Length: 202
Image 1 (cartoon, one colour):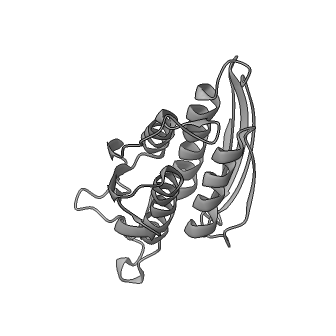
Image 2 (spheres, rainbow, N blue to C red; image 1 turned 120 degrees about the vertical axis):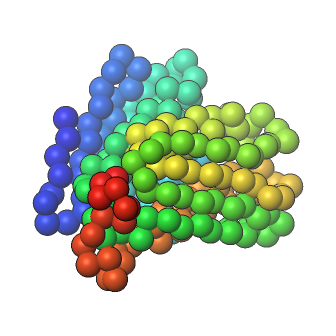
């Protein structure tokens, strides 16, 4: 089930399957506060970056089948956060819509570009030199971004331009997403509440 507060850009989503039970609350116009418990420490850390650098308030709780592996929890958290973002955006009236960010972290540089378009698509040009960061499978980063983009209804391009440290590569992807979304979702005062498309809807 879901609900949307008509006065602020905020939404809450719950989703329960035989693999995961998740609840998420997102406030797009927040302060960057995060209260996230997925059962996966590194994923918590990355989603905290999305909240902090996107200036979104995110509360998320997940109970997943981690006795099997981390795949279902990671993917389903992407699904629920994407759904919450789409719900909170509503009609998307007045938003900037497009944004891109080059995010540097020490030796690493990653480019993230977004179109908050209602047309989900992911281009993922990111490679890792090791199968894990800590105890987190690096192949699951793409799964989270795919699930998030699909359910948020955004076109998302993520390209790691260079880098050596796998932690830094992953973190620049999430921070870059946060910064790009923050700009793209900002209300453009020149739009005067219009939908940012010649079609009249997104």
